[in-house]
Length: 214
Image 1 (cartoon, rainbow, N blue to C red):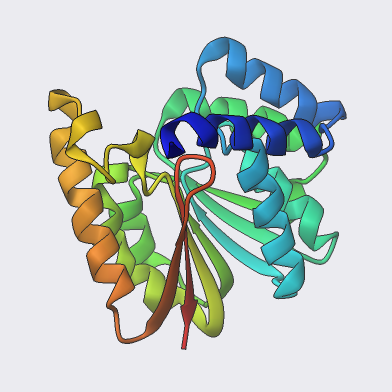
Image 2 (tube, rainbow, N blue to C red):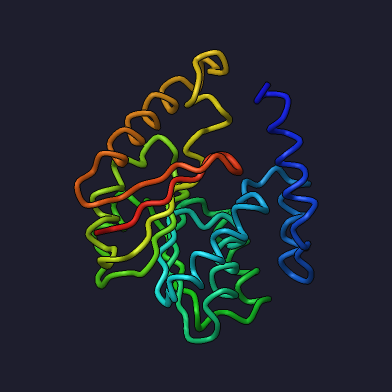
């Protein structure tokens, strides 16, 4: 039953939510036409709601891509907010920089080039919200650094944690994705039982996990 109903629910939600215009709308179209992974529409809206609800002003993002979610955070925080975002793909870095410049958000965004595994260890300061959207097989490797960089009372959001449904059932697992799926399952068990976190898994987009640091 759920396999029949859920796609209709997803479609209804996306059709009900207002469409983005301007640069964000252009980026959505570009991502669709060029198979660039950006957050799903309903996930983007939730990220903005969480940002506003927690009055977050300092956001750390792991996985910039073309800076779509980066700009969503900036829009939600206003001119006095700042996003530090990490990306290792050279092509995506160039695209992200171009979009940040088009949005006139250079003063609100620091783009760090490099592998998050190494970059995270060198970051100073703490953040109100951390968005984990990097290499899916390495979420658990990133977690301790993320917790250390997150303020008490802060929010950690992990994207793609149900990974096309494969995390939830072996029936959907593609052999070449098995390692990532197993690592994501380990991550979810670990984060849901972590003593410093209260965690909820939400089945929207590709699976979103929201954790509150005690």
